[in-house]
Image (cartoon, rainbow, N blue to C red; front, side, top):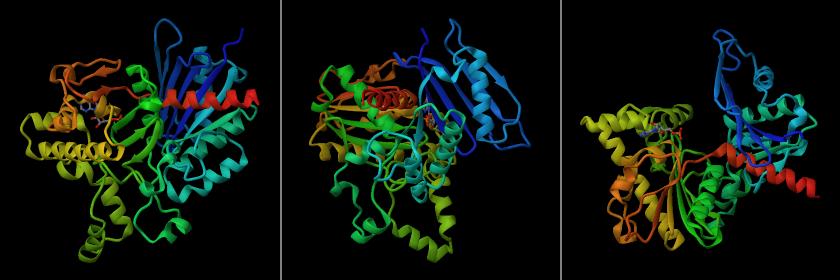
Length: 408
Ligand code: AMP
């Protein structure tokens, strides 16, 4: 009998990340990344891991890849050669990550021309991401038009946030006319780890108040009541909220007027300053938390300051979301930093004992791939380290849409 599969695409402007799952149990068959697409001068970077056999194989090639159309062909070839996907008839569906779904999308949807037009319309809200995501969708639809394709949005999980939390205190007409509001991102990660937390705690998700902290190169926090996001730290764009690798996170907006007037910086220069030259990098010259932690351990005062600022901002969001939720049952750390940095977890929980949150220092230092529970015995709040898996979540949501389609 033919084993049916689900393919997940995360298409960037010059990259294509993909992962192939078995439909029945969502186990991973293969995954890969094609980078430097469109750069004809230097060879594209390709990597592919086939995990269907007893041994994982890694193939690397170095031919240039002209565009996403060619990238999909290269991917199909790699899948065919590895024997993981010999024929497109084995595909039950393809799930595409789409960064911005605006207010139009509360859940994953089957892609058709109307959905494509809606994603296109949202380009002004995500000028870098949505066009790249659309490129992957268009090329995949061209390549295998007979396969159901599903869009899974980073913003969709946060569409449950109530009006009083998603509106900015600006003239209401800006929301009506320009859709200026909080959207939030990392939705697939926040929803995945919240569900995993409930499963781990063996409690119904709809009875839990959870704060999820996705801490990677981008970072965001979410307050989740009964499985629904009620607030999140990223806003109209991913700039707001926590301190990130190169992004400032929250600041006094008047700083922009001040810099515009006093230093003559124009809009583009301010955009670059806040998105690319700020955050951890702005403070200590480095955006990688591992390097920063090592420098802080060696006594580098700027690295130590960047680390302290990152954790202090995080701690303020934990406090704010405990208030927003009226108390939390569980706090989840995830993302490259959340999963790996015992120091960040320790500094961000430090001093919160009166809020019912006590870390076990020993447990916090354990490193493992599975879910790790790190609260002390007397902590009222569970503290969990949960590895995120956005591709799995996209595959799972894609499957839900396909199953609904087949049932109808
Ligand atoms: P992500 O964007 O989720 O891949 O996370 C990337 C971030 O995780 C980078 O800042 C890395 O330095 C950080 N990271 C990964 N491993 C560690 C570690 N062992 N300690 C501290 N930070 C880490």
